[in-house]
Image (cartoon, rainbow, N blue to C red):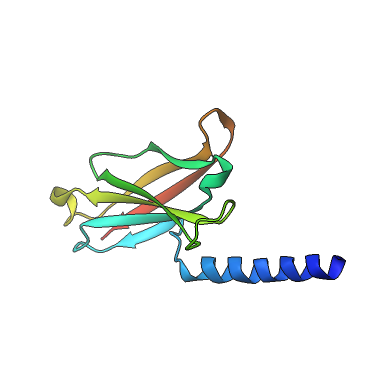
Length: 127
């Protein structure tokens, strides 16, 4: 029985890592070009836990959130399977030729227990 369990754990770990390695997640610092019109922020997520990403703060002089999407990484949507959250922000056209930086603060938690969540800060540099 222990052998079967060990094999299951190994196979699950391999499939989880393979799925996650295909997705490029957003780093804490992102360099943008003046020709960029939007940015997709992609974060590891798992909707089956009740945790969700929330936008906590951003500077609307520089960016505007325009879309959110949760994407399950398993094709058959198994409970507990990992996924990714994708926030799309539009860059303000009037500032695309002006070098600047701005920050987007995100929160990963449960709406009914916000003290248990974690904060993520993404810094954008536009040159």
